[in-house]
Image (cartoon, rainbow, N blue to C red; front, side):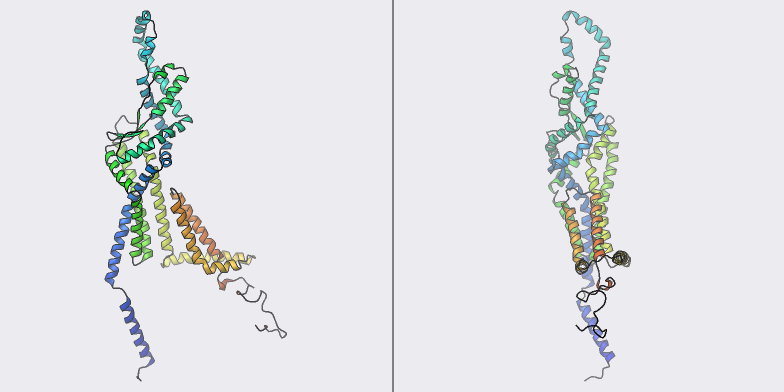
Length: 448
């Protein structure tokens, strides 16, 4: 027996409980260590993100012929590139056109007169013939048929492009003196046929010609080639490592939700820096081109080569913002709680209004109310699977998946019918029918 009062006993129990909690609470130093390594992993994920994007791009160009063709196919319809191709093909054809064969067909007695005449009109004749060849070439590259020819060139070039990334030469794509070129032999062959069909039979004597169209010309080609070769070898593992670092940092952090926000924003920032780097390098690349290079064509080639890289940058920016926003909205913050309350109150008001005009959810509402959390996570899982299995997702794809997911969650919230929000006249589950309890002979409720 003790003389302790109830208040003293409650105070002693409270002190014992506090002491127990203090012994169970991890040391602050342990929290600091976990937080430090979580930050390191998240920063590493952000740093690896640009490399992961470039590695994925490099791998897709090497392993997927259709992707390679779709990357460069728009060049065939670009006016600047069409003009540059026409000029290059015309120069190659004129070098191989056997004009001397025309003189051999002239009788020896007439040769002095012809030579004297050519001395005066020779340059004009050459210019006229060059103009004719250029006109026929330009008509070809501007026709609908050129798209098929260009695709054939690209498909033939894909195997050689793989050699470019692996450092080997040969094939339709070659690296010569810091210049990446594309062989236009199929285009010249079609131009030759077109010249013959339009009355220039002499073009039939043109041999098979292989001439180059410059895709990239820079003193950084060799360095880029080495970097792309390394990224190609690690093309699959760099993205996996970046995601693994982000997930590891989130799991190791003391506050998982906050770590998710920072990891998503950090990776989006890394992708954004890659986008800025592509724009800066574009200006530097065009500024260092030789004076004889067509700037408009070079600009079109560069923008086409990196367009999927830019699409990946925009996709990661959208994905990072969506994930960060979702993590913040589901967190315990006061402002996030306000947003959730507005969401629930708004959809709840719509549901009650619909019930007021006769809509009855019945067992559907009760089922959704019971399993809403699982159904919501199921919708999130489906959205994640769709995104991961999408071939080459873009920013619009990410945003549309987010919109559809948001719509699915809105439907779940609309169908959720809590027990205290049943329509007027609707009893709880298992109760008597609407209209009130059945009355006995004295007007009282009948016993159960």
